Image 1 (cartoon, helix red, strand yellow):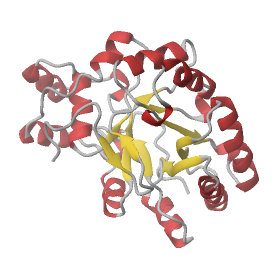
Image 2 (cartoon, rainbow, N blue to C red):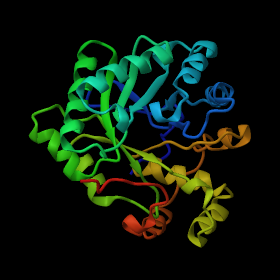
Image 3 (cartoon, helix red, strand yellow):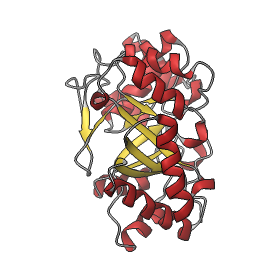
Image 4 (cartoon, one colour):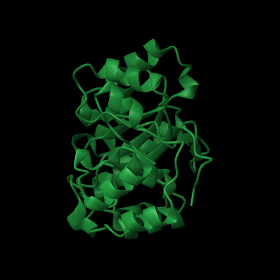
Length: 279
């Protein structure tokens, strides 16, 4: 288990060879003042931003990157190709449109947002991402909301393994079969909804937060980091953006982690769409 050496600058090396910052900043439902919110996150020390075509804020992320004054190579920018843009021709066009909106030369990580388009279109979309990677438009490719079956179909098609699978992941919904498959196959697991969209009133979470004199959100993000995941907390509130990154001067004990591990309800614990069982 990871412990105190974790810092806000900690990274994990992806199968593509690139380094992914372990703490990400999610921007789902961040359209108003998106640029200012992202700049606030950069000031708080985040260097990894998780966007998507569906979020309609890729252009704002690009502006924030340029206005931040931070060298481009120190930032890690992710986006995702939404279902409407799945299929080979749609994906090729959608990738280029994302780059135009960002006004960036490349995207660090491009994910298939979900598996809902069916096997044929999923694999065509993956092929388009692979070709864009070869062309230098994308550095790493991955998937989101993929169950084991969806990951297996990539392997069966003879394509390279995705670098990342981003799934809903928190103590109430631990997706253990997917996590196990990813860990055994060198796929980094990113965790969305790591702070339960603010629904953190479970007595165990509250008890551990009180013990450490920490916010419940900090406990949940720290749990995610210590489990080896890449959490993507989101907030539009400057104080929360800062506190969600203030995670590196305390450790959860083995007992704390085990108590949080014991909250798993499987699929019933999901608080989002969680389409990992799509056909």
